[in-house]
Every structure is written in structure tokens, then in C-alpha cells.
Image (cartoon, rainbow, N blue to C red; front, side, top):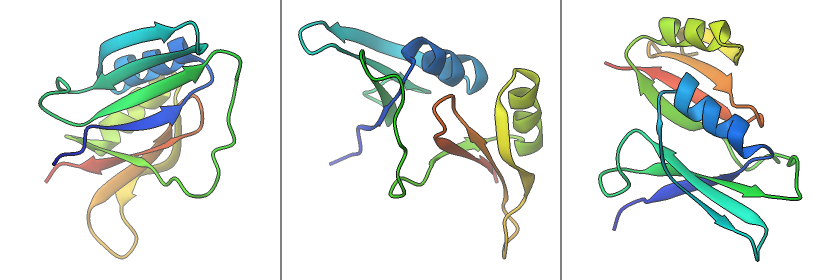
Length: 127
């Protein structure tokens, strides 16, 4: 068994694809419209779906936003330099909600950013 993907619902698919590809450096792996169901699926990731876990962005055409709830935590992305990654996000209009620095009660350097729909993404410094 292996983990295939994590699905999140997004209000504006093009805006979300832009965030994940341009700001986080992922690739748009595939996109498919389902007119009868009025939704679109887009898969983004750093590697092909055969080689790693990806994110499924689900856009229901008549739902512009979602309540994120309290059950979902965050996605985690390993980066070479957390400080530089945060500066890139800010320079391109993204939101850093926890600046880069050592984690509380530890030494691992982390930061948190949000995607256009408010989902949190943790940057973790590569060791």
C-alpha cells in the first residue's frame, strides 16, 4: 500500500493552481472537467503520481469557498531554506502566518504559509 494523494476543496481552481505551481514549485500533473457533476479535479505535485504522493485540488463549480473546519491541520513541504521560501512567498503576494524559525520546544526550522483558500502549509527545513 501507499498514499496516493490528499484532496482539498478549493474555491477558485486557477488561483489555487497558480499558488501551488508558481509559489510552491509543483507541477500541474493533470486536470479533468466533469460537466455532468459540475466539478473539476486538478492534481499537483513535485513528482509524477506513480512516484510520489500528490495533492488533488477539487473545484465544485458552484461553490466559491469552504469553511475549513477544525479537523484538518496542514500539508508539510520540505524546503532547502525556510527563510528564503518565506521571502519568496511574501514577494509574490502570498501570506506567511508563522515566520521562519525554530519550532517551539525544538530546533527544527519551520514556517507556515496559507494557500489562497486558507489551507496551512508548513515549510520544514531540510536536514
